[in-house]
Length: 245
Image (cartoon, rainbow, N blue to C red):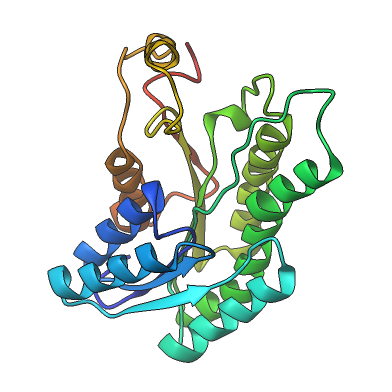
């Protein structure tokens, strides 16, 4: 699929990795539906940059992805404004430390609702439009920890493992018109509160002994959209070898 003139919805697009993905898609010619929840100012700045730098149409769509009805409402709003959708990038995610023994039901629900349930309901809402177009791409931003979980983040890891199962299930369900794939980032953008010691430990845990960047993830997303129409149900690690280290 060529992105020129296509419509792409990127969740969590206002900041961090989502912003890099949205900019990469706009540079290739896509119209961008920018989802945000709290980051209105950053979402607006992204929309302005998409228009000013690439001359692409950009729309802002606020939704709390923990709320199914709000998620579905956003999907319909995107369809009303752009008339259709060709690409969905399920990027928005909650990542919080939840030590075993202290995990609350709210912790559990928050991670599963945003990281797993929302991608399903967005795919269910937008998949039919893609099939009607005769082509579509869904890219799920998962995590290497969905295949190799670590302690103190069990709800997060479980949500990403579920997303990988959903990735395969959607690939089967939406074939042959729609290809569904996942990207599994590793250490590409560390939390802002990481100490230098913690940062170095993360670097040493990779095979390549370095951090990646949000652009590395964006390039993998671009490959899954434009690089091939013969890949579906796949999960590509972008982790510097962390998964197999």
